[in-house]
Image (tube, rainbow, N blue to C red; front, side, top):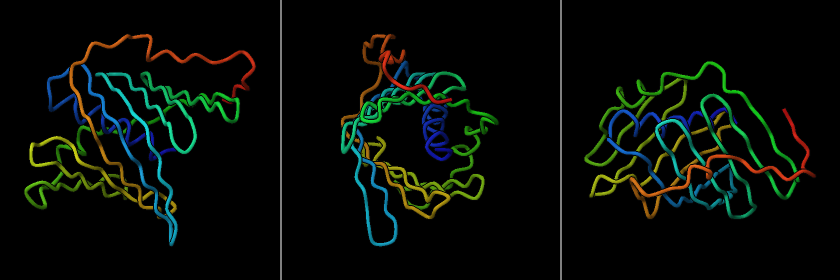
Length: 169
């Protein structure tokens, strides 16, 4: 969970300080590789300067809302909502500022013993970000159908938790 939060905040800070935008959205495919197995997740997300909504659609449904220093994860299959406070939010702008260009479309950034590889497409849009988590899983997120400054409903960032769900804090 820690590295997921760091990655989401990385997006917010990456775009907040380097591209003038109101919001950024994309479909994604996340691959988690561990030893000889891999698991593929799919979904979409939208971020603004200070909020994010990640919608996982495959293989299970999960909705993740990030506002300021709080993450709310809604897991319909488990009928639960998880509230988490982010503490010691890292200065992630520095990750991007210190990213070193490895090749024409590849950058590398180091933060707290984690190395992030950032790949851009030829048109400078984001292709993928990859890193290894604390369990030595390789996580790679690919981005498709990227859009900037779309008209969005701000209610998208407000979680709707069904009354019968368990709330975990």
